[in-house]
Length: 308
Image (tube, rainbow, N blue to C red):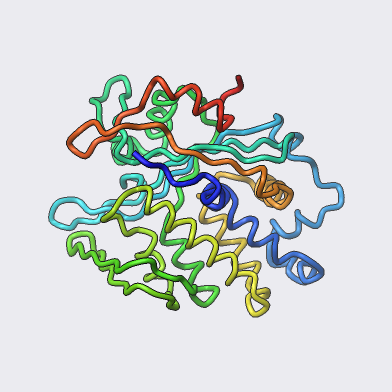
């Protein structure tokens, strides 16, 4: 199975860990002074005695599991709360504070996994069974890496953020057409450059009729377009709202102090220090994937989720 070039995917990891944070920092400057009263996070950013990430988190690095979920549907169309939805996006990222580096891997949602007391199933289903805690346990058992924090990202928050900044210009690579009445999902995008509102942009990101790998490339395209639009001059005044949405996006798992610390950390991470790969998998039949155990350790070392 072909895996897209890691050099084209660094913005995916940056996006789900701290992309919204970096976008907000990109708006920084003298204008932040006028916004400080509107955001505790911005106020903390301006603190001249701001602690280092190592001091705030009490360690040189943290490992984060990011789960992208949206509302799910049960048979008959009944809405399932986001907390019980399947995880469409699964990523493990390590933030190296001392090295100013972000590394990690994405995990295809159809990868088979096992948790004691549960039957073997696709890894994206564990969140629907036992929420973030069980999803965390499933990932830890699958790759043997301890997770420090879990972020459950809600795509609908990204949709709100897209509308907040006035939509995105995206060059859609091909016709994307998919309709799921039960799931209230209607994607109908023609190929070519076009301006997408939040709903259409999320359709672009959520389309999955080809492969997870194509979908991750669309996520990258989305994040590039989001950064370009968010940093335009007419959106500078919306920084406090974007900060608040970033807090909502990350599920409030970070304190204001931790969030501002991650913003400053993300600002200092250069593109050469963002390294993202893919969990090694093979076709296990019945549209399932399984981990290539013989390549797992080397992959975890290459993308620095474990030390050699």
